[in-house]
Length: 166
Image 1 (cartoon, rainbow, N blue to C red):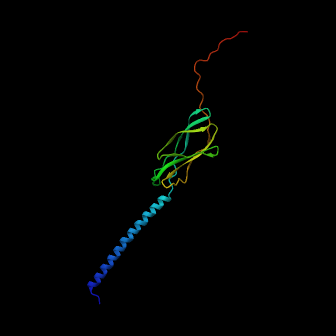
Image 2 (cartoon, rainbow, N blue to C red):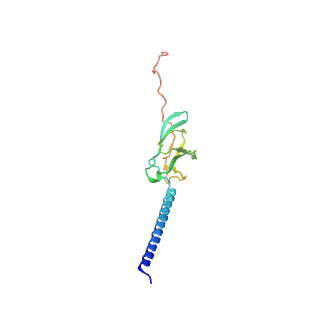
Image 3 (cartoon, rainbow, N blue to C red):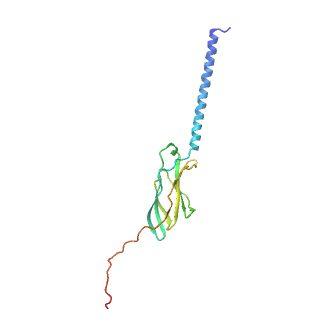
């Protein structure tokens, strides 16, 4: 038969094994949780831009109009932590133009040249370090690039001179 001492020793060994197994399981659970967080971060797209895209006519030179562009902002959400840039995609008369990359926090593009009477469409997204883009881009309300800048005022006075009499 077993003595009380041998039973106590067996219980102590079993308790130590359970404690070691629990510690190992806790480490594995922590590793799985960390991996799940990383997977969620990778699979979570960057947030959608907050706000809208606004074009402001700045100047004109013959048929070329120069606009500044107000960009939407990056929302203050956890998914924004790994955003590396914004991308403005413009479409002129149905033809996609080269994308314009913006820096994180950039709120304005100072100069975009558009030929007069061009149909303008576009959208803006954020891109993260894995190349993921926002699911819901901010879409530009389409417009026609129109010269609304008046010519300069005349210099000097306006006068009339009599040149003949009848």
